[in-house]
Image (cartoon, rainbow, N blue to C red; front, top):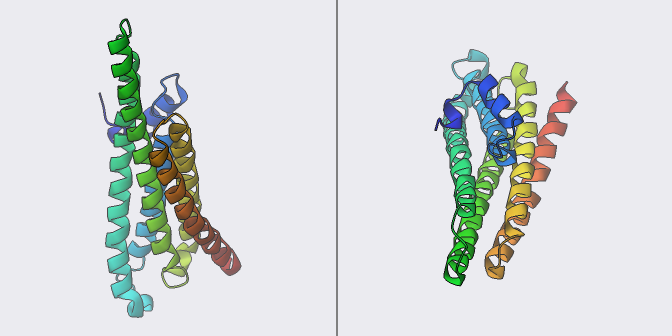
Length: 209
């Protein structure tokens, strides 16, 4: 099967609109994250080599590298999230005639659901990291691209909240209470850090418009 990352935009959105259960919200969250990181990288790129921004060249170059890396990681987790979902789908095809088969199926489903929790959680971590980077750049880079930095924050906010919904729906089916509690606690901590950053970036940029 073709990787989501290799599809054309039209093909990707058409597949998402279809009755195929994946790609879905998790893939959308990862794509939003990749767009956010890409926009931040772009604002850095538009600052590199500009005389007017001579005093922030090192910052722009370093930040561009970081944002490009985060973008690549979002694209990677987008495809891995679909693989994790496919693992859940595969469990439904497992036989369930004997008690032994039923037990094996139940155990496989629990493992698959854990896999489906880990990928959106990773998206949350990446979104938080990208928002921290973006926040550190507000008001320091090419001012003519300020709106793009604001769009980055909005994309990253959608990414982290969308990923969070995907974490929650998967842990709701997980019997391992310690696992579920850990992901809930860590996810809430990431949101508490990331959402105020996204709002700050947006508000700061709005003031300059």
